[in-house]
Length: 68
Image (cartoon, rainbow, N blue to C red; front, side):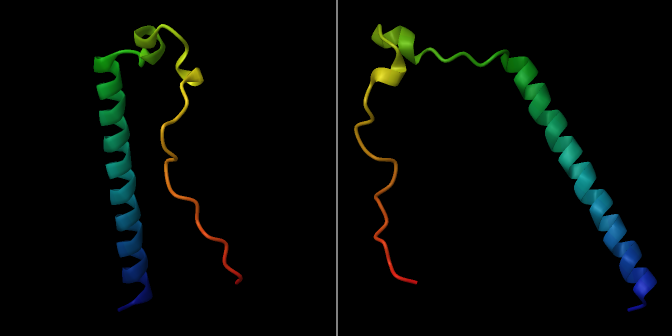
């Protein structure tokens, strides 16, 4: 294809991606506004700060070290 056509198609694609990102951002902001502020209430239920509760299990197993 002609380089100008390719450049125009690429510019149109970028504009489409930017418009989609703006729509997603606005949707997230609207959801946050409907939900209100995020409050962490884990400490209220246990009677002590949540940071003092030890994690029962590691989030993922440790990886073995390998020589590269």
